[in-house]
Length: 326
Ligand code: PMP
Image (cartoon, rainbow, N blue to C red; front, side, top):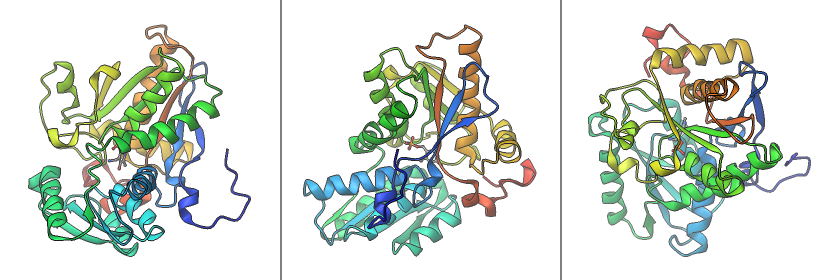
């Protein structure tokens, strides 16, 4: 594990190698471990793909030095790309639906990026269309398209998966992760299944999201407050491969909100809503393994805590449920 005892040349050298910490509320005999992704320089899991995808596109000439990266993003991906871009001679521009957190948009601007808002009612699909329009108007601009770019999955296959495998000496029973683009889950699952084909793979979404439709269910589409995971638009779930997924767990906002507060008060974990959903899901999978209701190759469950609650304080994450704006 990187200890950061040596001086480093750039924040890009601090992406990844995040701590893996036990979720204390998990069963004694089937511990859940979470990767604390707020330890990345832009404070979320998306720093991994920002660095990985920009470097890969510069390497293969998809993007020329001095060029512009334009991405439709809820925010964390923008911060990840913007952080990496400061070190790689790349300009950054982001298209963000209005409903997403203002903190994230401020951070993207502070990192030198331009932020363009699109109406909430146009959804992520509207932001994707606008990003492509902008790319046509500029020279040497690319839209990495995290929602369908295999490099997103590859970033986690090359970093997050191996880090977990190594930290647990290969003893991974199940991997659990909320799906936005599904890059995190697909990349980790692919790597961990190559080490052991029996690893249980569980996807997580908020109630109202449509990933369950992949499994022949007829979910009721709805709004939710949890930020960063879930899908409404087929244009945002192209990386999700249902054949890889053994279990899909959905949670409503109220229980996620309770878990977010519990994680802070009892475990000292200032993590956001997608992390709380992952915590609930991973504990449920661990309970089922412990009860003998689910077969897993090892008595260990891993998940990710993708970002910190500090990024959402203005939305009232720690106020009463009704006051949480989501
Ligand atoms: N949690 C948060 C807070 C996120 O910003 C994201 C990315 N949208 C995710 C989870 C989901 O990650 P992925 O896109 O890799 O599925």
